[in-house]
Length: 145
Image (cartoon, rainbow, N blue to C red; front, side, top):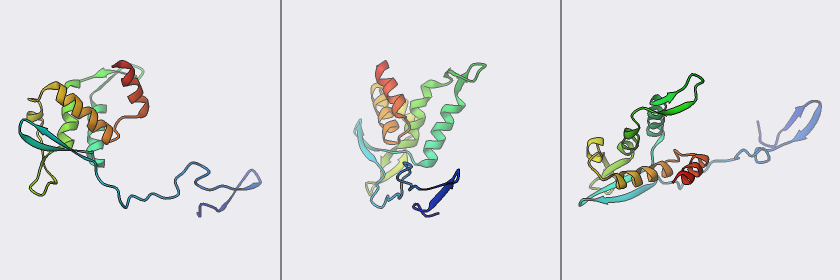
């Protein structure tokens, strides 16, 4: 259907476009680049890379799988919440390859040895660049900090 085609509802003719409905009329990602942020720690260089679709899904599935729920299905807590940050960083943190591009993923066992203040900051940044946090969640977190 063309975005400017006429629609008929309830016997009335009216013309609506995708833009009028708040629906984008085009997605153009021709110049889009994957977000990569250089990280230096203990003499080594890494890249914090935004999660791709598969990694974002794996992280969300990890979160969902570890949620504790009450009898009505409301989330009441998390199992293994300590691994939440490590899981995402294990998906988004890479060594720097010889070509300057992401090399191998940094293993969780390595990240576990890093100071919490660094892990926490990298996690927050990975969540933000990967858009794994809703604006409402971000506002709520800001209130709690």
